[in-house]
Picture: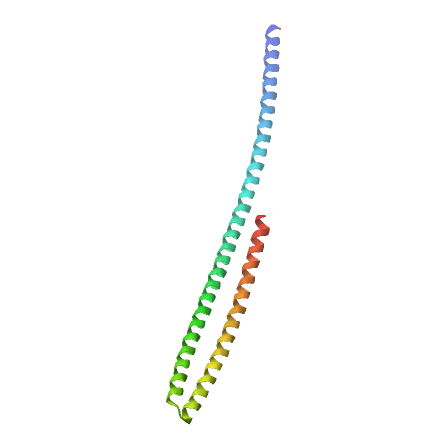
Length: 154
């Protein structure tokens, strides 16, 4: 009888240990689930951060391209103005030489040169207006990128 009691005691003790082990196992499984959820959330945040970073890099690249195009347009406009100024100086010099030479043919040549200068100036003004319009368009694109940037990071 004593042995039976002892076995019952050992059995009860083993059952208690098994229940305790089962509870610990369930708690560990719950902790693993919680940690897995946290890890999944961190992975998702990292993916979102990477996507935002890629978008930012793309927008920065676009803004840089717009800025470079704007600089190129300014340089082109300056070159056109310098070219026009040189042509005007050359025409003025020719007119001066023709006036000094005199004669009725010289007057016709002076008139033709002046008309040519006026036409070149009109062409130059049209080209400058075209470049200004293109610059305004580029500036509008830049402003759009800038406002998107500000909205995202403010």
